[in-house]
Length: 366
Image (cartoon, rainbow, N blue to C red):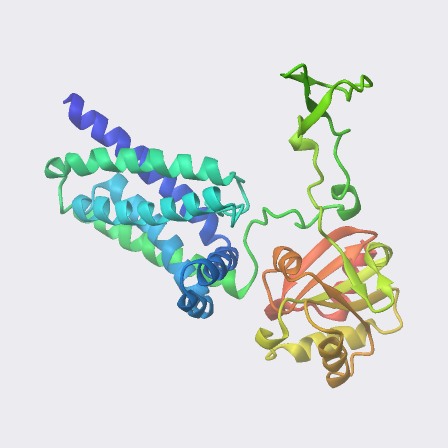
């Protein structure tokens, strides 16, 4: 009786964690794909060049992984094909453990994306979490003979329902934008404020004197102290946004984009930009001409590519360059539109949902 209770508690904890992790990432499959691309880049440089080929398949691989997390978690809790489920979760956790260890030990990918953008973990925290999961799954594996490999009919239908629902949610999030935006550039954020510390930054200074290390909260005036290191005490006060910038050949335009009314078209990569809905963006830009709202283009591309796009579409707007990673963080659509009023994010749109000029004007009028 005690053993069965312990097994069920472990099933509930492990299954619940996988469901929670999977649902957060089902909310944003494009974000998971971006994280996988980072790993494939690292592996192609450090391990074998063929990993680069997987970058083109990062999105379907990401959808498979996040949907599997949800479905396997449901199967574990409801008791459906438990022996298979334990094996599958074990293999998946071993894979995640390798990724997090590689990230932590070699300091390659500093955010594993285990819980998407909702909960940030350091690489070593992620690795520790995966090791604990491996231990718990290992316990289930040891007692796998006590686990049913079938399951009640209602539970099987629930699993099928979770599979269909997870896939539909993932596809909807890909074709639109995440249902819940956990990123620093979500709607309502004041970007200039988020670029500033929320409180004065405090440091501890590690100094050495007479062969002994001491920790001081102020830098000493005594020149006999030898500086060793400084450690930030209140990391939570760091700016939520630290890398936002746009520029062109004339210089930095970051302040300009955060002033007044802007309808910003973001493009992460010209070569993969979806062109099937550019006509609706054409109509939006044309309808905003002469208004108090300035459409601009920000792309992670060369000046020549930016000018070529503007010219080919007859947009007649200013174009600026931006960092690809930052643009991917801001916008999960290529292209995508973000409305900004004096640095405050009013609304974000997937290219499939490009607003009409009237809708844009009404939002700025509110």
